[in-house]
Image (cartoon, rainbow, N blue to C red; front, side):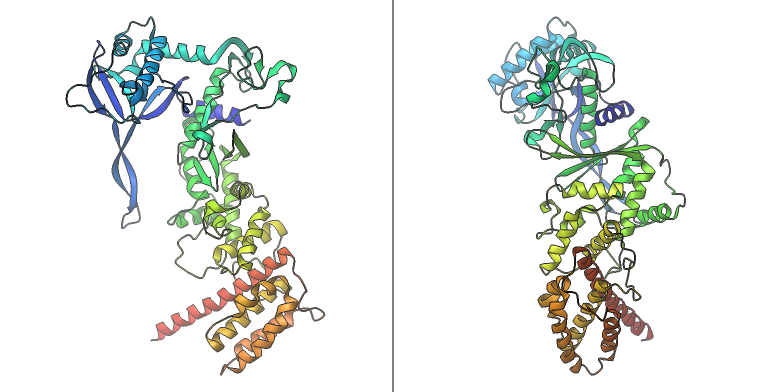
Length: 575
């Protein structure tokens, strides 16, 4: 299913021809028909990159230069050994600065261009007949720079005869004469013994195969577990066309910032089905799944429409179009697939909208940097360093799966937040929002999961959390600081019976120090009245009840903060 979807993506997006790939280059070595170097020209192209915002809020762009991208002969994975590429390679291979590499390039070009008589082919063969000599005034590029050939100002790889020679060489080198039934397309095709490499961040040497077989247990029925066993068919029987297609499509998606997101070591690749590659749908999902600072207005309008059943106004966006999501993570010898999903684009957005709706909670600040919390910020709250990259391995993919499918949130996420809170960290909006969302989705909680304080709720853990917030505020008003938060919160959250009698006794002394403690005493009495008289303070709270306690504490604390803001606003207005 994964490979079939990628082959379809290759066909929809109009991918590179078999045996060709887009690659960046630095210099063009321009030669004449006798193989003499005429000049060496830097290859650059001008692009526009984001550069802040204009006064009206629109994006501002500035011009920049980058290496030129050309469609060139595909390359093999090169490690520490010497392996020459065709028509495009490092300067050390092309310009003779490293003799052994230049000799390898000479042999490779002679092998491929043998018998080809076009002007471009003849010029390149003549070039490799002697050590290159640079014209006066030209400096040899760095050996790490990539060079391509030009013959009298025209790219050599655009010559029809040269292209035909490469296509014949590519197919004959990596496929056998044996015909097989392709597992992806179901059609007859030449057997493909070389698995294409995928460029995924974090894998060994930067590239690994998506399809690999490394166990003898797959050798049953005469199948080979390795492509090197020439007398047997590989266990993964793929044709040359479909193998090239799926790898080209996946590498193209991984190279596009609009079609992939990295989170905690995992990479999410996404695309829409259909002609043109579904660029609009991918763009919408890109900013919807990873909100930026200024995306709140457009995200809010979509969430409101999706959750209310109203039509969504996104021009040229097809909500019925099939949408694919593939989560990959690196491993020692191969690429691991964490999950693969296919659904309509509209359903994918609805699941994301549900996530943001369940995460919605009162905030201490009206001017938030991220009104909609991005996944990386959620993961960062589970770590000591506040860096998403330090989160528990695999948690990134599990969180993305829950957001996209609407399934249960990973308990590793919930436990990580509880650990950070018990360690004494502040209960900020993100932590409280995660707890609220987990209680709704994992524990089917309905009573106490409003956006802000629910004064009518009779839930005991929630009420205890509110009570702790009241006692903390009372102490702060009485002595100017609140120490019970650091000393007693962790035990009060897990074992209320061991902490609340102590802090309630302390609150009596704090009330005596206030000239007017009626408000706090009244609120304290009201909350104590909500508790079950037989056992007002449970000996222990379960993990979900600890979340309810924390949510009650956060709601009550933000209610105090909101009332203070409103009071300050009224006083400023009256003045």
